[in-house]
Length: 316
Image (cartoon, rainbow, N blue to C red; front, side, top):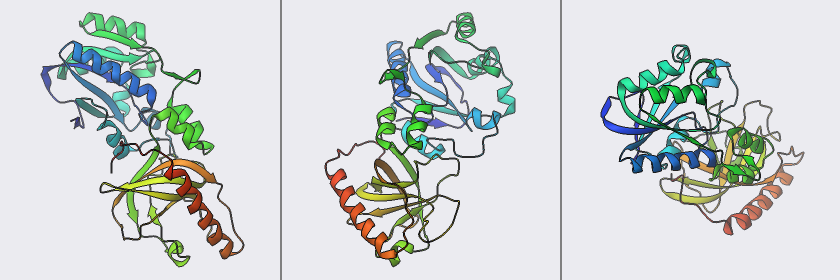
């Protein structure tokens, strides 16, 4: 079981192979790197560990306020809990940490850890202004008898998998493409809150979620989804958008109509996995037209999800 720490613990008696990075979304490129890390650790009789950061360095250094994350902190922990790593160390990224160069950062790690090896990707750089290039990092590792292992990029459809490619897929509503890059469905996990009961008044009660405003949402529209909580897995239809038929708002809503389910799940942590885009968000002049469309959405989602394999990851 992966152990999580919110800083660097004292593990001088435990040999470690580590990797360093943000690992936002834990896509297939990240997964390939972690597989290599675990192989290196097992070969040397060491434990495997990740050093990651919160907030994301770009959020701090570029003062990003809007949607950016593929996985918010709690969602990232859900993914990392299934990674097979022995340890995850999350460091608070602030201006003080940003000022450290590669040599200083490596010295900080060696002060706390028995570091035997470092596994990184070909485009990795460390330290202030990314001056810790692989060449510089190689010199620093050699100075401290730390093995440096550089992993080639993991490619899909002829291009390296990256968080940027996942974001591009989500912007167009291509949640299948995003899942292909991620190796798992794109998901939202947050508590169910009481909404305005607009769906209930139409005969379609929905589970409403409020997500971190810095979490990237798929393109506004309606999706076939899988939802889970407390170990129960359900089929669903999820609307992402601003409910133009009923109100004018700039805050995105996430509402999921759970199929074959009508219990109250307020305050439950609900995980919603986006499986397929069904249609764009539409403003209807007649409420009956919306009701007819929702019935059609339910039929289409059921058809898709009935024939869709249900992965065992991202357990509620």
